[in-house]
Length: 421
Ligand SMILES: O=P(O)(O)OC[C@H]1O[C@](O)(CO)[C@@H](O)[C@@H]1O
Image 1: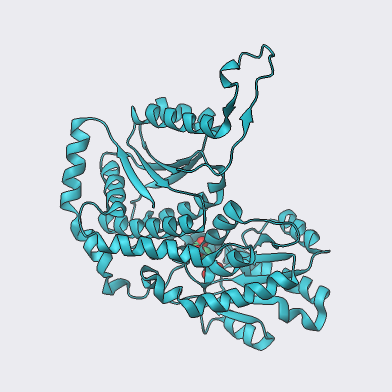
Image 2: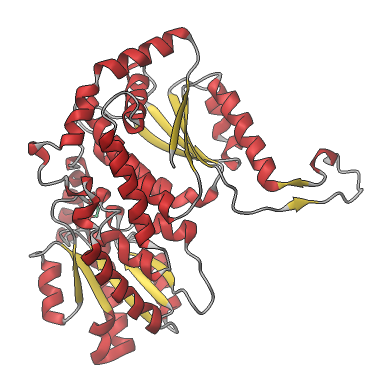
């Protein structure tokens, strides 16, 4: 099971942290109970609402059809509409040749070179596409869906609609378009905002098509839900994480770095960044989320962490069980790396992790979130843990976790520019 450990040194820190834990239990209670003022955004709190048997069965049926008929699946979506699925698929999809379809991502860029690459890749592929967009007003998925519909029409003619799937809010223009064109439509839960949709129809289909065990993912999330709702005191680990973040923030550490020695978390980082940036970054408040892909970035950002402006605190994402092994054999040559003879990369990576935690903890507040294994069950736990902790953290900070009014500023100007042209 996921565990959480804090490494803060000095009596003052320890005392302040304990006081913080004692003082903010009200925030935990409000999140556990759910709040009437956020009634239209909280359905994700109970995995049984959006990830029940009926939801999963329909997804598994559709994924079975796609896996049988296609070698490629295009996920058209941006932000909350693709981050969760992408983070799991890119980390743990089995990718068996001739068995698991490849997942390709569109709808997350306006760059013509990138989009042309996707179109040319699809030329000789047998594909299905899915457009996921809450209200179907976002430019990136809207524009990508147009060019991909055109491609599907060219490839499959009158049968194109059989290979086009959509996921949007019931009653949205995407729903209407789908009914008119005969696309298979999945509902984007109306009471869940994009970045909280990992455990819903939004995340499930691409994951299941890629061969991810979505039932295990939901089981992991559900276990975490049970745990975080049952623990009503200072031993609740999502509460501990939220308290440490806000204590650091009060002490002027305004940047949180999520770091790991597991490069397969690369796209999970994008999911985590969106969750915290859009939830907390408002009303001139918020902790800036940044990420560290170690050991590589110890050779860049590592210098700043150790000796730069003390503005960062760090959360390590660790995986207990290494799922691979690679030995370095002695070759007798004088390369001055004899100390690596007959060592396993898994152990070397672990040594680098231990050394980095020690070195960084001497200078900044550090905590470690540890998963047993990198699998679907683990990802389910992580999604629920961070969503729940983010909600508590926003309560402590006094901001609304479920809106993102700032994102509209560039959108309005962009629509104006595009309409004028
Ligand atoms: O699913 P939609 O409506 O296309 O939204 C995509 C993303 O765009 C945003 O509204 C802002 O970038 C995110 O909050 C959201 O996840």
